[in-house]
Length: 266
Image (cartoon, rainbow, N blue to C red; front, side, top):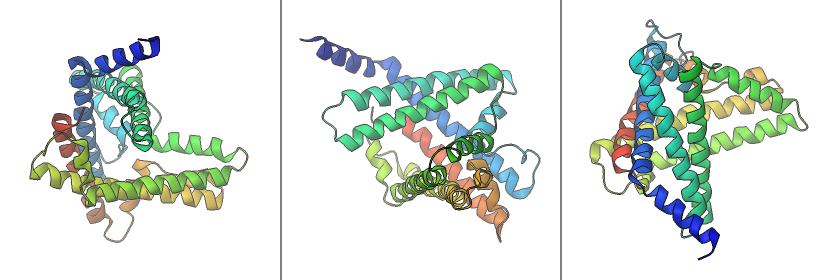
């Protein structure tokens, strides 16, 4: 057996170890908790309740945990869970030759995303906070806008985000998320997953529209992240009700994530 085959076998064995598997499941569980916190913040924003000034995104949810000892412990557990979840997805995408190229690429992309979650969670746990999600998004867009063909690149990124949003809606509407699970999680989880994916798709779609607006106006200040996207809903006609429906969708996604932690195919 050559060294590459030995390395592949060792990686497969590591991915199948109980520690990595449980770590990945913890990552999904933490993700569920963060979505519940985002939903709670968004509801506060919708109805002007105290606490509505917090960021209605992952950064805001993480920062709300950092204010007490129990929350700090959960943050560090989240760091470990996201790291293992990222490692599992990336290595699975690289070593699983039986999957199609697009499925392997999707696994690697998910792994990178969870790695970013781990990094963000670590910064909040270790340093007590990060820049707001909207500010990070605007800083990134400003740098991109300043390069050659900046507005075009921002527009392409906006189209990609809109594509991700459409896929979330499709995945929820057609119940495609059930393909990620090793067995049926129960009707309650299916309904939560449907509502959750569609609501997230709507929110991500709004982010994509902000990117498209920034591309057309060549103004990076037009860009908003998830926090800005959710808060922009409040300014619409019937905004509090619309934002409440989306917030409940994020809560539903959080509930589904707990079921996913139990039934996900690893």
